[in-house]
Image (cartoon, rainbow, N blue to C red; front, side):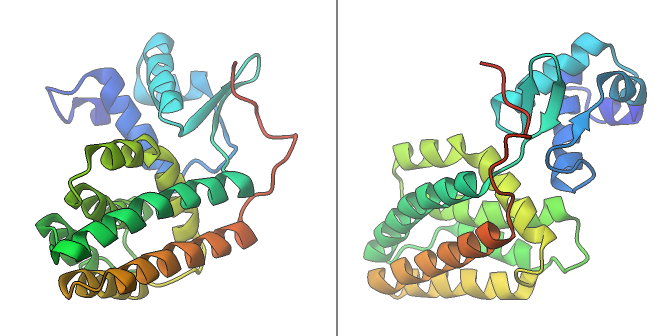
Amino acid sequence: MATVLRRLGTVSTVQALEEDLERRTLDGEFQPGEHLREVELARQYDVGRNTLRAAFDGLARRGLLVKSRNRGVFVRVLTSRDLVEVYELRSAIEIQAGRCLAARRSVPEEARNALAAQRRLTGDSARRDLVEADLAFHRAIVDGAGNGRLSAVHRDIAAEIRLSLAQLMETEYATVEDLTSEHAEVLRAVESGEAGAAEALIRRHLETATAWLVSHGTPPSEEQPRPES
């Protein structure tokens, strides 16, 4: 693990640790609710415990980990309520962005690039790659609308989106081909100026995923670690 921290000379040890711990979380190596053992991980990465704690703090601020007093650090569990709230907010942001783009018949080049990158993936691709490709497409739609506040809010919930997508990719919800086909439909509606169709497609895309996640998600539980206040 120590080699992970040397891959980029310009990246701090804490940042490199954050990136690799995030990778392991999104790839499913660390499961939702799993206790991350400080001594063991410090030994794996050959770093001091204070350095590891700083990386934990960064991931906790971003919503990927939960710190529980006297219990330790855990991978965040998204409850059914969390999933619904995240996807309701996503829908409000992304539908508005899609309508704005369709009104201008403007397809962001970043969205085309994200779709092309997603088409190169397969069901055997790493889960983190599938998550990042999906998020890149949706982020390109939001950023393309040109509303900085919409983009800022979308980025604020990026960690929760990543966790929900990782959970989605772990199930048999849809193939990569199914998802890219739905994304391509959205771009065609935007390009043709069909604001109503773009809205309907984005709404269906997100609501279907939400319903699946809730039916296969983790219900609220008193046993889950509570974050520090």
